[in-house]
Image 1: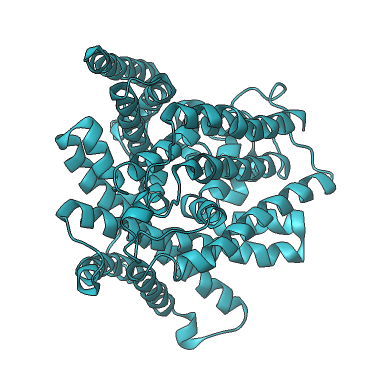
Image 2: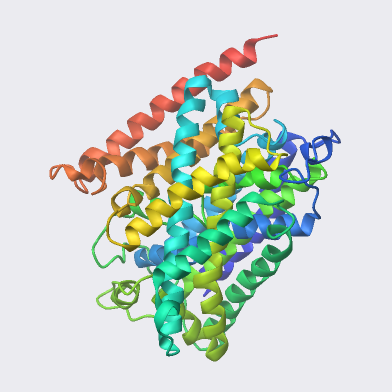
Length: 491
């Protein structure tokens, strides 16, 4: 358990040390924030710092740091290192700058922010990229909870319309429409802090259950090898699998929501970097649960693999019951239903704001919001009901989420690095993780079974993928360094 406690201590210390360095590098000041300057009563609304933190945590988390961390635990306690240092050096930096650069550009969506620092071409790519990604996330987080609710009501003996996925999907999508349409402080600002607290309580309960239950968390130094039952390479599959809880591009689409609600720039450290550290701690606890609760056969995590094979809801239930007993059942139900829903509705809200920035449509008037909400939720309904009825299968597209998610994170980090270069500030805190994530994304793309790995000769071919990832990352870094030097040489 020593390595787990060390990683936990490093994460907590990171907020006060490296997080402070990141904050000082940007240099928050007393300028008027968009929430104060614009304050339209819909998306630009001043909220208390503690609410901003909890809403940001829930928006970026959902089930990501829970199920993703458990999947990452298949590789063994080595995943602790990625969660810890990924959060500290990459994820926290990514979330902070995606939020604060939005705040410094009138609360602009991440696609617009990227375009400001990487050019118009990248802005248009990111516009399309972001909207498609957000609609897909929102739809998946509607269909999934609807199916889980059906399972729960059937277990209680319900039948008829209450046992129909389409009924609950309609309920979830109706809620999404309302939450996407109305002011951010009406539902999100009131309910989400409560769910955010529940997410934290669930993680604390799991941690206490691990220790009081007599479970042993394996040490990194005695298990410093690949424990994946399928021998899936650590690099770069683990870095793609464990996104939320280390670094996730999806967070960049969520941070502008809170950037439009800051009363002061000085809140950014706590709201953005702090929420990412909290998510990293949650991921570390769930990764520890995955490493300690299940049978290891021949040095491989076969027991965990068997549980994960039954799906994310079953795996989460199993951990909660093993660590918290009957109380865990209640928290697990909340986790597998409420958490994805709270990420799904903010995904659609972010999509609305991305489109409003794209087409320059003010969102103060009801009709303007309806003009964007109706088609967005309409597409979500078509995909959701189409998938439920077996007419549309979007799982093929969804398989690309993992790669596109980390590629988005890579692009945002490069944009932040260019901002710092233009401001003649320390760009290395963004450029180095951007280079690392470039290597991760390209390596995965070359050998992943849903990407170039579709070609038999390239599937998990590390001899080709590893050099390709390194070479492209070096090229990206060289291009950036050249552009940065030009910027810094200007008077």
